[in-house]
Image (cartoon, rainbow, N blue to C red):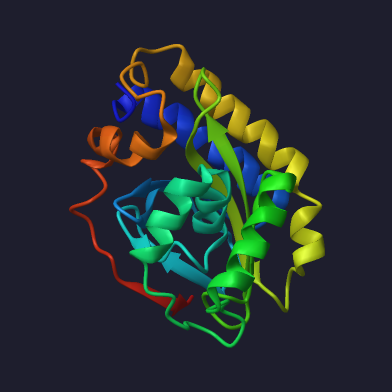
Length: 212
């Protein structure tokens, strides 16, 4: 199973390798009922970093992983999800205009990634890439984030190749097992079918704080 000790250790080792390579915090996330949920995380060693424990939930419209999930959904599913999502402003850079967000998501879909340019938290940037199952469906995302004073968006984008390598390694581990076999072909149903993957994460804290 995906959340078994062996699979979890393998996944965490891949994230740890990526974090060592880029020198910043790396996360594995999934979409669940319109929210982004952190499944795993490897912190950077910098004293200033954002703490989000596995199980934490963040908005979909203003985070790198969330925007990636939205960008890769079919247009009808994306529209339905956005209609049900309050486009709350979390930082000065949050895109709260629906038309502007649609344009942003279309552009991100062409690049097959997600970008948070100080949209969720002022002073924090992030980039996300997809983890796909054997049928090519996006079932998770790997994200790297850091304070903007330490890493610009352009610098974060410079790590995309390494991130894609890590995403493929995680995806390959998942493909070896039966755990994504029952994910429906329609990507719009993915978040309903992967809830078993979130069972271990959801009971943990959802509090986030900035600090050492």
